[in-house]
Length: 80
Image 1: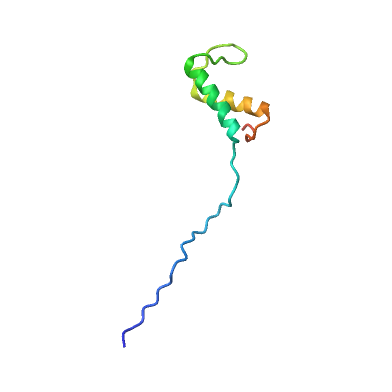
Image 2: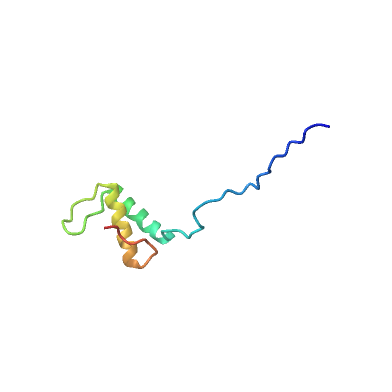
């Protein structure tokens, strides 16, 4: 008789610590950021108080998210 080799079959499922969650930002919030980025690239985006032209990518995203929050779209709260 040949020695039997027993191997466990994997079920193919991986256990993950994260649970399934919904998206952090609404699609409308993404559109708001997209609009602000386009305005920045065209040189039309101005900052709030000083009115200077916005050249920073991060600042354009922050302005877009801020407007999305004001409009009531699903966006996580600001940090800090």
